[in-house]
Structure formats: structure tokens, C-alpha cells
Image 1 (spheres, rainbow, N blue to C red):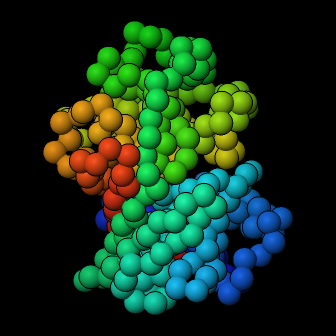
Image 2 (cartoon, rainbow, N blue to C red):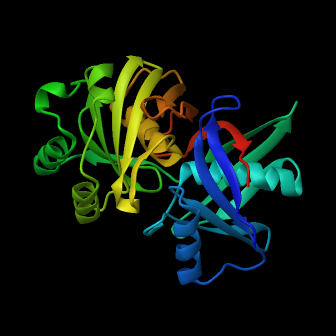
Length: 277
């Protein structure tokens, strides 16, 4: 079984977040999927198998299974478009059912996912304090217009809004300490956000829970964040653009389309590039 390597949310023929994609008639065993994900070494690998008129999909990071991964879903959409032709594909996840659309046009492959429903809640003061300590920030670094919160669009994240782009660039932390905090609090990632304009954001995404220091593009966190902006009554005008990965030298571009219905699915889209085997 060959694993395809696809960078999702790419910036032309550069950047993006590499994901593994394995499409097979049946899933390997849990232990084999975990082993394959660790051998691939990307932040996530998506495993898809036909299930009636859909695909049963599971996502594994190098050290754990995760309930939903946006960039691996975009990579899977690109792979399915090449395999089956352009279309909208139903995906049955561990905890929800979503779709991904894959399209080919003029040599460019694009994909768009519909996330699980979104929800958010105020973050506890203790968690905020612990996260700031972990990442080397203080309360003075926080942007008041994006209050710290638990956000979810298929997986749990903590969002911290930062006042300056310089603060975002300065992020650093201890991986083992980050893993302990995220696993203790049931977080898949921490999303750090700087607001350039009401519709354009710069983000970084520590992913210590999966054994990865940082993701260059995170569709699940982007969906959760877009849902949170809707909860806040943010003037998003139905769409936001997210730039991620610049501080890693892997610039990635994500777009989130936001319906006015509170809690509803977010459409997250981008392009994908196939990597050398």
C-alpha cells in the first residue's frame, strides 16, 4: 500500500502542510496505521477506505489518532479527485460525517472541506495562564478583541489572540511541556492569531499533542476559529483568509467561508501540490 504525500493549502507550487494519504479497500490495523503515520513523519496521515457511497476516514499523527484533521482532508480531496475525477466525496469520521470537494483546473488541484459543526466557550483563567507560561507570553501580549477561548470545529483547540505580528513570530516552547498541557486539557492544538484586517489573519499552531512542534497549515483549527468569530459577532462578511507557516518558511494559504447560522459547518478551501515520493 503506497502512501501519497501531498502538501495542502499550498501557496502556488510552494509551501503548504504535508500530509500522508493512503486509500485502500480496507484500513490497516490500528497499530499499523499508527506505525505508518510515524514512519511518514508528517503531522497527520489520512487513511480512507470505501464505505458504501462514502469513504471511512481515520487520521493519525505520529504519536496519536486525532478525530479530525483539516489539511489531511484537503490532501485526501486532491487524491480522490485524481483517482475518481472531480466531485464531492462523503467522509465518515470517528465522530461525524463531512464532505470534501476535489477539483482539477488548468493543472491546479483545489479542494474544499465542510467541517463538522462548530462551537466555542470561554477558556478558564488557569488554562490561559498555563498556556501563556508555556509559550513565553504574558497577559499584555493578548489582543482584547479576540478573548481566549476553547474552540471546536471537529477537534478541540485553545485560541489566543496576540496584539502584534512580532509576538506571533516570537513563539517558542518546550515540546514535552506542550504535550503534557495539551493532553491534560484535551486540546489537539493551540491556535495563535494576529489580526491584520477583519478578514485577514496570520496564525501559528503548536501541535505538541501529536508530537509535532508546529503545523504550517491547520484546516481544523481554521474552521474552529471561523466558527468562533461568528460566535463573537465578528465583521467577517462571510469569508476570512488565513496566512500560516510563514515563520516556518512554509507559507500556506487557507480560506474559510462562514454561513450566518450559529454552530453550522465551515467551508475551508485551498490548493494542493503533490510531493515527490
